[in-house]
Length: 376
Image (tube, rainbow, N blue to C red; front, top):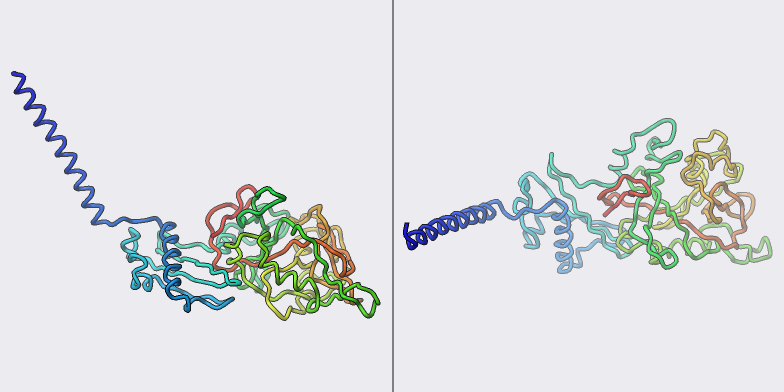
């Protein structure tokens, strides 16, 4: 075979291979166009939030008022050309539905995207994941039913941590971990911080006519602690702004009780509710007492309540909202094992509680300290 013939053969073979490769690429390109550029469910959720924010930037008067929420349907975003139809975004989009719930918490807007694709994917609320992972028990450590009032954790629980971003701990950024106390009747999730506020506060330091001194009054509606709780939502040290939009304001249990009180159902504390709603609360004595599995946890001052109790700790005294019935200036404080009576004028740290709204979504995690629930 001559040299020229070999060259021609190589050219023909090379051209054939190149043509075949180009044909494959063309087929792939045509197929991709026919099928569309699909995204994951999580990516679509992010795109829904982005599209919703653009929609409301053009229609700000449609945003919900404070402590209210509104629903923006996916079809509206498609009609206004902020996003493509579901069947262009998801492979199974024809069988899916989607919408975004927008809520206003202290002028912070939370955008909660919902996607429901039967048999494939459904956006998961945190409270549903908690209930799924914790079957209700009637003895030992676990999740207990509170009748018609919801559910609460008892015993030495180790899988009820939720992470709310990070927080500054004396110059070092650490995980901002909270403990899940209960799931309320309305499916909000009550949580408690694991870190004190760096500042300490007086419960009340007004001049008390009865005591003829600045002992303060133990009436919540005229107290300094009322103002402190109201202002916590404005403090950046509690949690990142993005998580504050996950909170819901509620009235607080501000009824009085004695150290000898044996009730564990909130009948004393919740016999009186605050006039206004607040985003942050303080731990009520009954909430701590009912966690303990020790039968010797008889009353508020019992040290036995610290046994088999996931909230038991060695800590500084913190304020509660529960005042004594016997005088007008003493309030119950909590030191991690038991409750004591203290004069309202004293300064103490606080470890706030709060409620996550039902639009708080589960991302990942098993709820342990090393693998806490991650939310969005």
